[in-house]
Image (cartoon, rainbow, N blue to C red; front, side, top):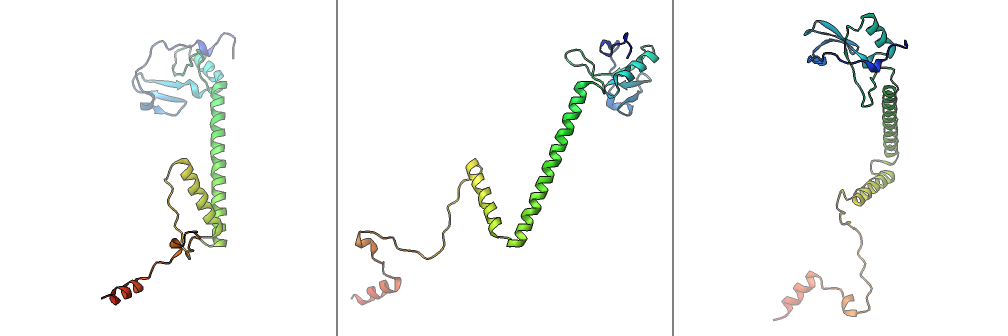
Length: 179
């Protein structure tokens, strides 16, 4: 880059009302039907390419540029732009890694289910842990647990509570015996 050229000193002399999206071309350059000129996207070009383009055309260039609040023009080799691209790559890589982990754990759980059966110990444990988490987070209301099995009479010191109530057959026999 020459010492006399500063991409940040570029100004738009005459703003154009044509929309970039309506112009034919690619992300570097498009043709404007309104002014019948090529319009260059400086953010898709390096600082050196912008300099060469402007100097070659003696400043008679239509351009699209983004200027930061600090006055810097964003170009393809701008450190800020490169940081954005780098951050986007890291986010993409992180998403890919999370997807691989999710896929791997899903396949592992599926394999465990095949070994233990659909409602094996492992599956039941996962379902219980997931339910406990949902209850703690307040996503669902806790459901009363259903207990099945042989009922044991409570041991109590009051003998009247330890008596077994009569069966329906005993009640009907007692009712018929009384005149």
